[in-house]
Image (cartoon, rainbow over all chains, first blue to last red; front, side, top):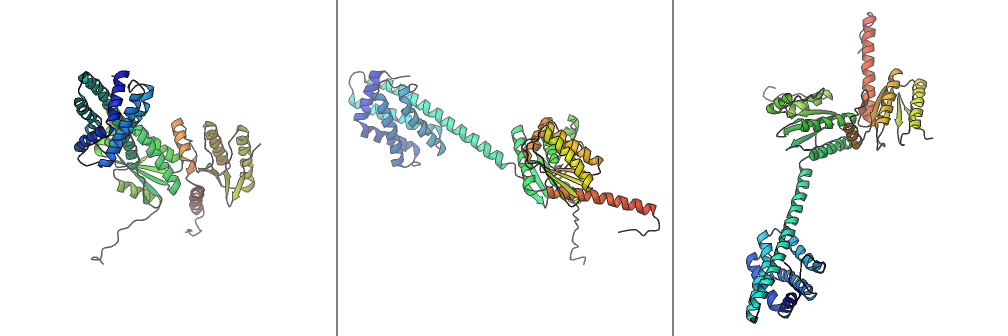
Length: 286
Length: 139
């Protein structure tokens, strides 16, 4: 809802003439809802900035958040809600920061009294509601981008390539394997093969909850790519249900070695690379 | 026209491809390599493609052809140093470079050829032993 040119002028004048009083009251109300999680001075600074932007926009004529000359006001509001979203304030607290202006204004208008006070207040309140909604939207946008960032970090975290032995690396896959993750795993594994010069890789799927044709396809592609580079891949950690699913779906692993556990796979690889393992005789027997 | 150099290291010929392969370069390489294998009597060929950013079906076929030619001249071919990105692309394209042995790097490639040769010699020894009953068994 836009505020007419006349009403805008009145609002700007009201805010400008009572700047000190408005920001003080506004800060008090917001600070009460925050319970000291943001310092009074910092809060005051942010609200003064918003106040200034509102006055500046009001002096130029109609206040309408959708128009060109409200750019600065929009920027200030977006900045405020971004900052609060990142600092972990709730949506309600962020919205109250804007809506508290209503209370501060109401006191001013009541004190001034006169004709049309109610009409003015309703018009101002409409504008503040609009500002509140805008704040809320930028708050949600910021949160969403935070979630997207975290999902990306999770992707990075969840696919480590570990060295098991000289020349043997393993990828313990955990969680559902979709195309994006499969791609990351493949690239990371192949790069590690090059970096470490390991001729053997073990892909452990103990932590993969379900294997469908698509997941199998991703794993097979990784194995073939590793072979092209001159490394051998073994698939391990196939649980009984997964084995049944694989057979039921008719997935062919061909001549790729599959083992039930990571230990079996490591033993297999060590035998292939000619490493002898023996249990040391215990002291009691000696 | 660019030519790919062929280096002889002991019993092995090392081909390091550093330029983009054109039809002409590829044909020249096949020719040169066949000549060198015969001239030096090498039993192993290592083709290093570390520097290749792109391996398309054409380069893939060239590698297969070189492997076949070497096989006829009794030399083992190993392709080494394929980059992860190249391997992924080949898999996505469905090219699996059948009949070509691969290794991670030149060192591993040389080990692979040495292993293949020693297997052959052992087999030869066994054949000799069977034929020559009077000779005592070699270690």
